[in-house]
Image 1: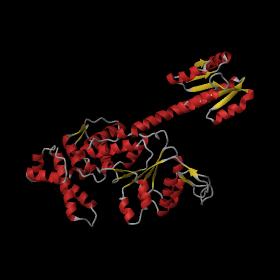
Image 2: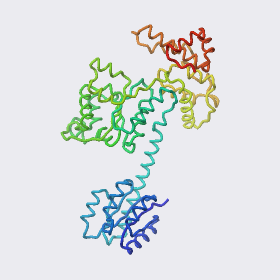
Image 3: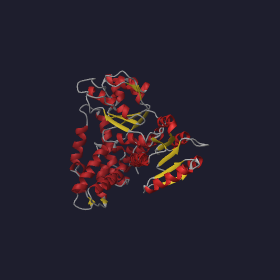
Image 4: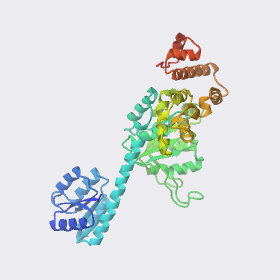
Length: 457
């Protein structure tokens, strides 16, 4: 599909020449001698490049430029100006024009300038499509599940996304904290900006400081050139700080300053750099306990914890397991060029009843393994790993995850509640069958359901 060029010039001779030249070069051209009509035309049509004369009655080329930059920032603008008005063209470049040509212009120069603008337009179009694709892939609607626990998370995400407030996401490893961070970004007005992620546990403190703030040439051994840090790269977008609880005391102070003042200095530099970023932090540690132990600054905790999103573990949203399992099955079937009918009812029961200590990430890995190794086009119980279908392995796995020092009564209650949930899932939420599986009366089961606040249907 040819690039569409809109040409605005009150001199009709130039319009005719430009229209003929551009059409001969393969461009689709709309040539107008009334700039007001041109601005109206932009509202109704897809335009890739605008070429406008600088001096026109009613609306000047600079006004056209300002209108395009404000309303259609992805469209490059080329200014045409008389030789004696180059200063105005230079000023237009400062306002955002891609380039300018002087009248009378060289045909080769003009065509090279238009070709450059067309390439820029293609890149902008691809960037818009990529952003739209990312927003579709990582928007809040892509977080799979229909449980009450997950709906509460999604409600928080959708309410917080339009704001610039800092968000703290907590929860066990594998619950999908980074996916929520991306949903916040791609559902926000910042979605066209960068989403920059850094795992604070992946670097030692010295390296992490340079990763976050960048460094100046010669600031330390090996700093052979200036380097921009993650804060600069995220300017205009979102910075996701994963495992925030692992920050050293020194870096906690520096992060607090950025949150308060929205400015920082590169390592080895003295110049303050202003940034417009939204910070989303995540931790699988209990930061309140870290504050109480003196391991995490209380003032930083409250700065981060403006909006708190608590990700539920998968064992607390078991009704989402079948949906997630099918989502991963379809994904890995496509990647491995296979076709599957789905899971057998018995396999779904086992998957729904399992405790999932590794949460959604563990489920994802299990489904990928099943896709690779399954002998038929349906995932059966025998295709599942031993720890999921073997009760002894499940018990051992669960016990191994417990700390050595525990509150025995509280732990036993949690295990009892987990066993009741599993029995309900395996019985299709028929309470009489679940009670038979557990060897208790229906009335005792109903008492336990109320005690542990478990939905019995």
